[in-house]
Length: 202
Image (cartoon, rainbow, N blue to C red; front, side, top):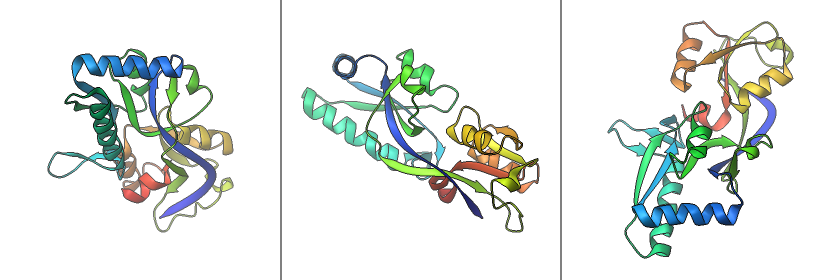
């Protein structure tokens, strides 16, 4: 069962932080030389980017990356491949800053603090923080989260949302979406806070 909270986010693709025209130019020059776009994305964020039962990367973010590959190939006039690397809350910004990846396309939310590290594209979806709870849960308002164990992904805007709106909630860092759901099923947390679209997909 999903319970809604009143903070909404939009997600974007990321580029290394330098003035935007130079950033786009540098990335395209690198792709021109290598013939490869190295992109970071999630492997567990249904329906955006995930590994299906056949072991293939699929999802809306993957479709966007493929469209970017096709456009880069058209502009550069040469075959361009797409190489996908798993990127998550813990490493996506450092990967961009270190130029380990050319861009990241996933469930990444714009914040002003993050613009000190990376550039953002235009948004491609809007979502909000929701709470996944068991059907018989009494949680249903911000006040009801006080003293409850709420699972969150580290360094996520959902973590910050719960922290700001209910400082008395006990935040429990989960490894990934699957871990959050398993901890909820086992009763080790009272709720799991994440993007509403991803929770619905899972």
